[in-house]
Image (cartoon, rainbow, N blue to C red; front, side, top):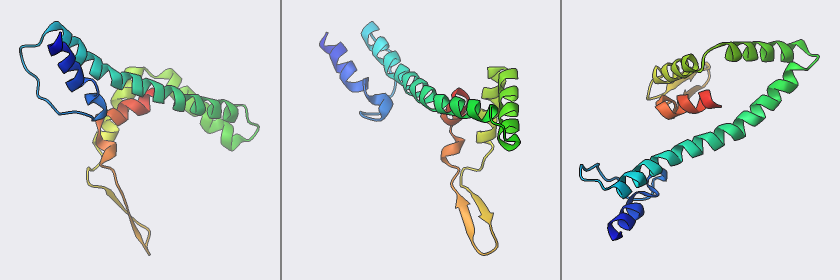
Length: 136
């Protein structure tokens, strides 16, 4: 039992960056396996909550724009809804994952003539961002 509590102490907060970055071993007990799987499942809860929160506001904004009398608001909202409602979720995952992986990891220089802006794209090349945007 003390070994199980030690595993919970070592791995419980690892998914949010607290604790050691321990390498996997081969001699796990059942309690240790549940703790390791549970610490990874926490990310699903984080992404799900964030997607629900942000998706609510996006959906509300799209609904208001779609019902607008202004054509410049209504048409982009209608096309956005048409494209995402009509395409399979797997294809959306693939599209966004590949789009973000193709970005340069260093950054993109935007030359405006009188000033050059460097847009950091390092965080956009992570796989979790593509998944988060598709869930959003």
